[in-house]
Amino acid sequence: MITLRDPKVASVIDRMYTEASDQMAQLHERGAQLIKATTAQERADAFSDFYLPVTPESGQLLYTLVRATRPALVVEFGMSLGLSAIHLASAVRDNGVGRVVTTELSAAKVVAAKASFAEVGLDDVITVLEGDALQTLAGIEEPVNFVLLDGWKDLYVPVIGLLEPKLSPGALVIADNTGLPDAQPYVDYIRDPANGYVGVSFPVRNSDAMEISCRA
Image (cartoon, rainbow, N blue to C red):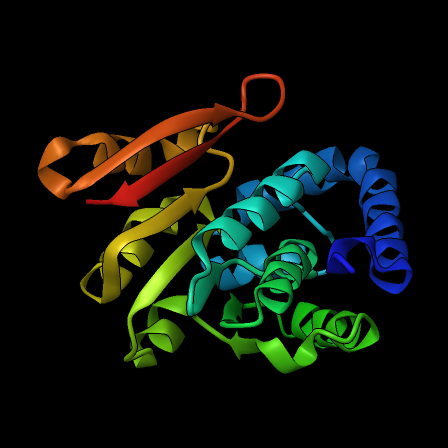
């Protein structure tokens, strides 16, 4: 059975997306707190109860890409409440090989996401690194074959810079929300031929997009 279609997994994903949709009206109110926040920790605390997920279509795309590329190590920057990690881990499970390492700064989100991973039975293929990703990801020593960037956009360039020496040839790097102004420095970096990537912008919704890049 395809893990995403397992009734247990599908019901949790549906529930999480419903809860995320119900939060949308509150996001505008919470935006004022984000403007006042100056550090990544303050931003994480301000949104510690919000999903901020990839779209359902993006989740399906992530699953498909992991199935097709069969990465031994998937690294996610910005776990939030775990929706994207569940899609990534479902693909890893169905591949029969690999694991997901995901990062999150909010302690509250770490607790909630771990509970969801256990609920869907994917906790054995997901490792959660709590804390500053620029510190926690520094401990990864093995080759990284697949990266999802979905945390604070101004950290995309520092995070990919940290992971770059560990990227295997042909590694996929997926960045969400690259239509947002804060992500423009990353877009400029990843599209610069001098930096060694080939990629494409994949429209998601409205003016937003995912940048899908391959390490040449």
